[in-house]
Amino acid sequence: MYTTVIPKIAKRMVASSFSKLNYEYCVIDWKDVITFHVGLYVHVPFCERLCAFCPFHRVLFEPGLKDEYLKALFREIDLRELEGDIEWVYFGGGTPNLLSGEEIGQILQKLKEYVQLEDITLEGKPPYFTEKYLKALHRLDVTRISMGVESLTKKVLENVLRDRTDVPMIRDIIRNAHDLGIAVNADLMVGLPKQHRGDFLFDITRLADLGLDQITTYPFTNAPGARAKPGVSSHDCFEMIETAAEILTGMGYERENVWVFSTPELAQKAPGEHPAEYFGFGPSAFSKIENVQVVNPFLDEYILCLNENQTYGYRIEFSDIFNAWREFAHRLYDLKLKKSFLKTLPRRLKVVANLLKLAGYIDGEEVTKKGRFFVHDLTIHVIENLPHPLSNPVARGIACMNIFF
Ligand SMILES: C[S@@+](CC[C@H](N)C(=O)[O-])C[C@H]1O[C@@H](n2cnc3c(N)ncnc32)[C@H](O)[C@@H]1O
Image (cartoon, rainbow, N blue to C red):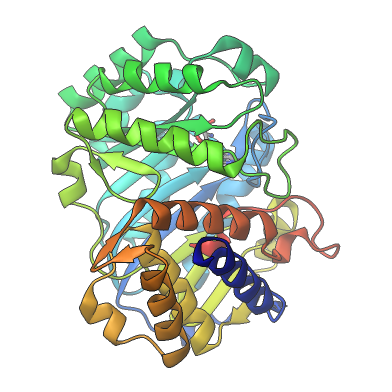
């Protein structure tokens, strides 16, 4: 009974809190925002080809547009006058490694005019992580790269308009990166159309053998903006990830959360106890500091506003209970529910936590297999259904899926 009722109640509760989310499009006064330990996210919205599965804000690469973007980004960094201790920096996209090493260096230099930088990661497409490029990243103190492999199966990739990366290329990238002390993550997608269970598990075993520091298994979500449709149910997708988890943990990887597996050395360096607070720069980037979330506009509007020296964004102030929900969901996703944390929950969430225990989703501080499915399914539900300020008609276009985080 609990197994069917609790997920339904949880989804309904989440949906009803979404309906209260109203963003206001306004000039953001960043000087009012006081921060301590934060991460920095930089969105680079360019791609050479638009993959059919991708819901992130991206446009086709054009050199002139890229120059305008960089000019706007530098201005945004100046206008926001950052302060605080930066715990991590993440370049996401789009395809950040379409920018040259020199351009990445200029962005980092601009940020360093305000803050010291730590733990820098850059995401991108495998073919652009050449030996020369990796050396440039190393000189800029980039400590991790994350590459989108998605699948090794040709028919799966062709169907979603994605280029295939072959295993020798992945092996070379890992070797070159490791020679420079750079850690490597590979993203694999689960449940793409035409992707069979055997294809995915074959990919996992091939990749796990190559010495990656981290493997991320993303269930394909039908977030607004993705043109392809998932090939399997959320449950089948979860079962594939669970089998991957058995293979990977058997090979020495640790499960960092529902979808991410890391070597013990990398897992140790994972951000601490609390869900991060972060500042996002660039078009469509999210910032989340305490109860306030801000979402930057899309590229064309972003450039226009910054040409006028204005930092416009979609702003929302979450209620304390919504924020508590987010934190609770985060910890479930990270599969870590310390008793000391459970004690601090507001009464309404304590009831939910007790129901989850009763239903066998939590056992002591552990999230059980049933609980992992619940989190996996709920996270997909959130990504697919959350009202997104950029997908409303005023700002038009596609959504970005990291609103939940
Ligand atoms: C922001 S994307 C950037 C990928 C990078 N530009 C590249 O081309 O390799 C980061 C990762 O999100 C994942 N992703 C993209 N679309 C997704 C979707 N609809 N559902 C789940 N994961 C998705 C992919 O694994 C991808 O590598």
